[in-house]
Amino acid sequence: MELRHLRYFVAVAEEENFRRAAERLHVSQSPLSRQMKDLEEELDVELFEPAGRGIRLTAAGRVFAERARGVLTSVASAVEEVRDIAQGRQGTVAIGFEQGSSFTGALASLMAAFRRRAPRVRLELVAMSSTEQWAALRDGTIAFACGTHRPVDDALSSMEMVSDRLGLLLALGHPLASREDLRLGDLTGERVVLEPRERDPRLRTEIVAAFQAQGVHLGAITEVADLEALLALVAIGDGVTFLARRTAALVTPLTSMVWRPLDDLDVRLTDVVAWRSRDADLPVVRTLVDCAHEIRPMLQPDADRAQT
Image 1: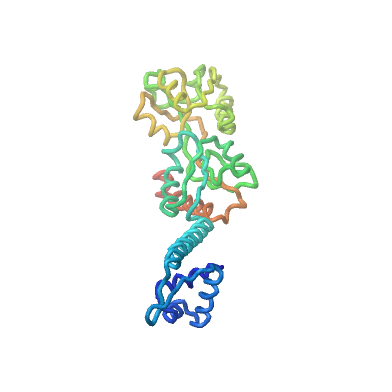
Image 2: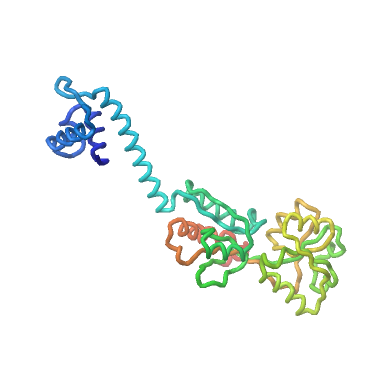
């Protein structure tokens, strides 16, 4: 028994006439009648009985028709589902992102754009550092990444989304908070609270190198893994930290902290998206990359957009 036998049977059952069923199926009447007879012989049951100039289903035929429709509906749904998955319109995609970046940078805009294009794809967001994201991409744990610096890996492709200046975040009552113009030398001896080095080794190296280049000696560096705990320590004056300007714009209105630029600190936090190069043609990855291209111009500062 093949699926076409079920389709033929359902057509005959609904038309109650071999001629009309044959016309509906675009087949000849004689072969259709023969296949229905073969189906009855295979099942060892009568499915039809004469009814005037046509036929009607027997009790067994009515039950079989109901089951046959269910099978055909399930198969059609399965076909549609696998096609959607193959074309990136259904399924699940795992995306890595930096903790604390869900309301800033590219992530929120990227997810909104992707949801418009692929409403039936389930998003699985996994918080991890950029370094962890690059490793997760390589081993296939995630399919797409939203990090804060470009991966140095030939197996990964990436795109810069937006770059933002790093500045100083400190408590409103800190002695330096009242000053608009600050330099690295003003932080001599200050206790600095940072995320663990392994979260972003490049960023830590650039910050420390900037102070060393100016001959500035920092106080103790305290590592705090949880971002909320880190911000809480800064808010109570138990240290200062470095934060991108756009992130600070969301944090400071809700807290007793202020953000100040440092005139001689030329370190930027860059949002990038990345994916495995060999996956570039996968429909869901291609859709995410297209979304990144779509939203990238909107993420640029007003001054930069005005020049483009």
